[in-house]
Image 1 (tube, helix red, strand yellow):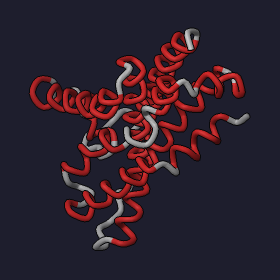
Image 2 (cartoon, rainbow, N blue to C red):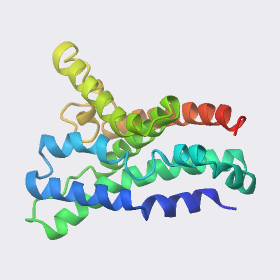
Image 3 (cartoon, rainbow, N blue to C red):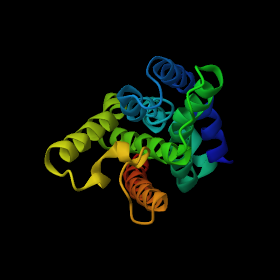
Image 4 (cartoon, rainbow, N blue to C red):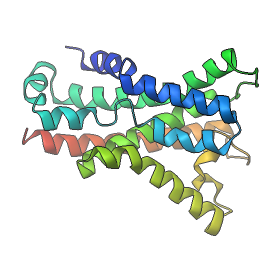
Length: 208
């Protein structure tokens, strides 16, 4: 059984995905690509589609029937990548829709960075959900971390622009290796979250 394909279809076709997409489009229509509202909305909305999928199945007991059909590793990585991809697609899809149906504002030229940032914040929400066993922590945790990084950068470490999460998809400074440096950093962060996610779920699944 291909757990990843099943999870991705569920994530991309969920009510939460379309709700997040609609909200993001409304934010863009009201404020545009360059607004602070759009920038801070990303870590919140990307957590909606699939960051709590495992938690829902674990708490409902559905995992006991589903897990033997796909295997532990396939199950965990399917949930992780479906969460990350749906989180990355959501803001990018909103940008496309706004560009096509909005007021003609020029499309951001770094959509891949927006995708990777959305992916990172989505999987971070999934890790927080697994760590705290709470949907509320998943939906709010990424934003809290985002806001903490903004405060650290703006108040204490202005020279460490790599801490500033907006810089990850709307860079204003010169990065080592340019955009490739941002891609490598975000890919590394996603990998770290993947390792954390796998270790936490594997431990929980032993008792499932």
